[in-house]
Image (cartoon, rainbow, N blue to C red; front, side, top):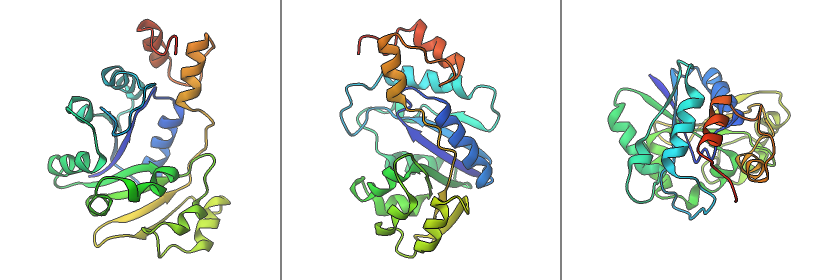
Amino acid sequence: MKIGIYGGTFNPVHYGHLRTAEEVYKLLSLDKVLFIPSGRSPFDKPELERAEYRYEMVKRAVKGNRHFEVSDLEVRRRGRSYTVDTIKKLKKKYRDSELYFILGIDAFLDLPCWKQPDILICLASLVVISRPGYTFIDLASSPYLKGASPVTLKALDKGKINECSFRVSENQKVYLCNVTGLNISASLIRNLVSSGGEIKYLLPDSVKSYIISNKLYKNR
């Protein structure tokens, strides 16, 4: 199987996350996308809602989509969560599958600062998705994309192509995917909830109802 691994805080999950997962699923012909809400982040984030709440919101958001699943792997873990540790566990669970770890351009640029990045890129292929405020040509300086052609990167930025790949290790590649840039952010949703604004059409109704019933993001 070809499994997309979509990690993040999902604080809260919204249509931007879901649309990205759907487009990557289609572009790379994946068998499924596994959402993994983070547990305790390596970085202190005071605005981060409790992990069990964020997991439940993702669970509701993906319900009804047969090729979307959610995992509580990081939610159940004690201590801080690191991507490389999560991928190692998934490699053991899905021994006969190919893993595709999904992350944004901004996160990929920060990859050298992650825990054991050289091991991470040998465990799973990376799927780098477009992000508002960033361009693919920014990746020309990445130590993990030394073979990337500036012409190809510019073609992605201009929308002339939607996907391309480069080999970064003996068994793994980096896939660059141009996805629909929905101008929705979790921070916008949190601020709207806190100020009494309307969040309808920014995220699934099931997630909105969960936020309201559990009084999440109030008085922030």
